[in-house]
Image (tube, rainbow over all chains, first blue to last red; front, side, top):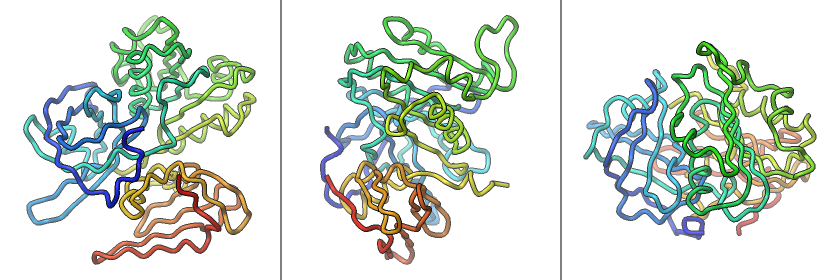
Length: 246
Length: 87
């Protein structure tokens, strides 16, 4: 449970960018070297603070993509009118220094020792904390069945596409839906997530699954409503909404 | 143009600020609404972030917490929260 104990007055930590990896045309993963990092749990996030030369500061929250014990990696989507994400996606390079505060969150977390089947529902970059959970499952050898339902605009917008394919099997399954356009011969879903789609994909309510939903407010509300219609208990569903400013 | 519903986040969004203010992880902390008595974890409450932060009960929509920061000071109004349980 590192990172959830009382930390005292939390301070900002210095973080150096150690690697950058393009995920899609709008999304990039930054590996951070954080010397005083206390460790994190799958699903947690951190705050990034940038300071301009004139002292102006901007901070935003980003989900941690890496599994616990595997360093600190953030996967960030560029929001064109954002204050922080354009720098992180377009400009940050190896050796750059930022400040981080975290890890944050004790609710939207999955540690890998929970026995229930897990349903992960992600919209766009909402997949990031869910990816930390999928990586954690592989890392600890969890036997809990895990299914990821991932909604993306196009096949090119699917974050972690190759790694998700590689993780599939052995009780981990990925179901894609592409809402804007689909490649020729596409065999997955082709529409926004609705109650009918969720009823087809989700574990039966009789299995009392654990559910993690992450995406925009509109996406999260639609997914949560659909799951309630499918007979899920509201207490099984953990949600995390991200804002429209980045 | 961002609609009002898109401005509605949840308690996860202020986890970092709460960690700084209270020195403790609070997104999983149960909070009781002074308006209707509903008990929910902070992460399950509705949060609106603007010039200040407003936390509302997801059941009766009463304002439970207000946070305003400026000039190095933080103003915290917890009058709408009957209790806040720290683990």
